[in-house]
Image (cartoon, rainbow, N blue to C red; front, side):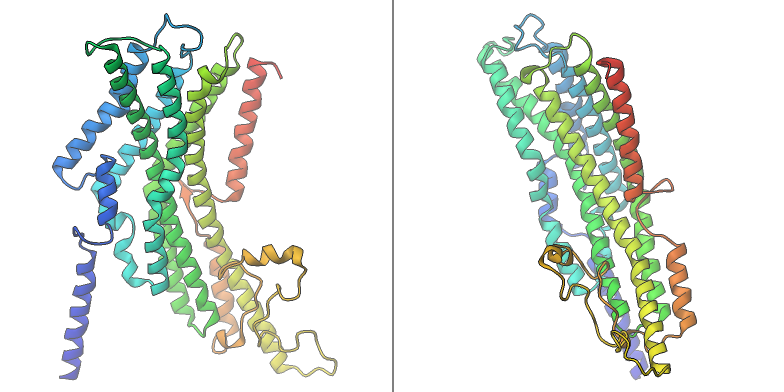
Length: 436
């Protein structure tokens, strides 16, 4: 009877956990869905999906096209001409289209809860759940931190352009009303395209932040007397989640890198070619779009490199754990007449940061559970044999985890390679245009 009652309790608990995975209107995603509706990218049902596609077609395609071909103002003076408008419009529209299609695919195939890994939080510690939820609530604040400054500069430019006589097309019967409507539509289009792009980048950063929290929580297994099997299972689970993130985001990361690189090189080409009239009135909008695209790409690559670095730091942590255990066991089995420095071996938790100069204090402040200079206490490996520890370290060394793009690991070495290639292309292009 006791076993049956326990089985029923376990079944009820399991049902309750899975019931929490079902999305509802008042869960932790409620405010997030509200923001998605305000941005017109919510696709929770057929009506909102149709509305989001209509808004995307209008603000990301129709308005930029009409603005470029209908409001180009070819007869305006030198200050109001827009020679670089085509590059800026195509760059923002292409990256917005990529972001919108990827976001729509994510929401349609996985749903918000599954895509943001909220359905897996029930298996995490309380610390991971709280910190991830807090970071999730700050996501839109971070989104507007990136979008609003550039939008304010764009608004100032557009208001000046229309009020100072940039165009006078009275399609509403009054050129003042017409200019006002056109200005609002252009600003809405610019805000929409940059917000959609930054939204996908911020969500990627958020998901990577969850994996960093998991890494920090996973590092605690080396501070307790854990079994090798449990350590291996937890690491395999983390690797699986990193592989899922890589498979979901790799098309977006790759195409974003291609589009942004092409956009930046096109901007460099049109602004450095002979006879190009470059000033704040002509190239200011192009500079704003380039800065926005480069900031979003930086968020993507930095987040991927950071989680890859944390995942690979586990190998160093496991090796340190193995070394501390080996040293401690050798001290326990050998008697020496001469005292050895740190004679307690790893019996005590020693920090390298103790006693360092004030110049190195900032380095110690940046340490965390995964990447630090602390020795591992002896009780963390008291029941694990040398062979098991060595096998676990070998497994970590031969199974690198991290964010990959079609097999290429996005770590610091990869970023250095990308930077070197981009710099070489920039210098080659400058050599063709201005002859450096």
